[in-house]
Length: 231
Image (cartoon, rainbow, N blue to C red):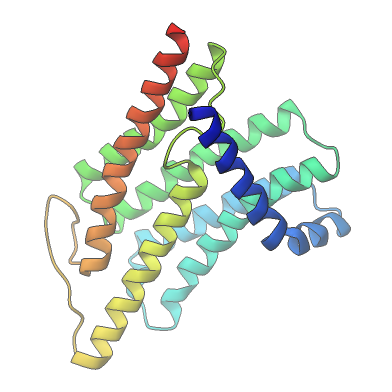
């Protein structure tokens, strides 16, 4: 059953790839931008977006705030493009895969730290989320060392995590500024054990869902690994 689900998930990802990233990938290949350079661009985007969040840039103004999700979107797109460019130009190497994997882990950590220091996550919850994100990657790495194929296993893989946080921030901005402009002040809620600053219900609910889906993904990968190691 898991093999069927894995195959279906990969098929959907390939369909998405062929529909939406062909032109950007062709542009990158045409201008001789290597997969490693693309990986570094994505990493730099993650750093810039996280720094802006950490200095409370999410609420600068109705116009400037959109810089953050825009940069996050570019960084997330680069994470898709680097592998595709490597495949199409026959530049898939162990060094490139190692570099990309480590930059992804650093990007994950920097993003969570940006949310913590920007007050969008309570310190304890933030570090729990950071632990879960690391565990998701570690379980896959350790399982594959034992010969278990983990491709497509897990509800919240990196692409899903990036997209979820991106849409959570977009939802936060829309709700925050729409209520601020229409009601004179934004509708926000302060729950100290979740966030350190008042946020909209959209972001609050999103973070709760995000946390539980991370826990589910860790358990899902652990369960799949144990089943395959015992078989």
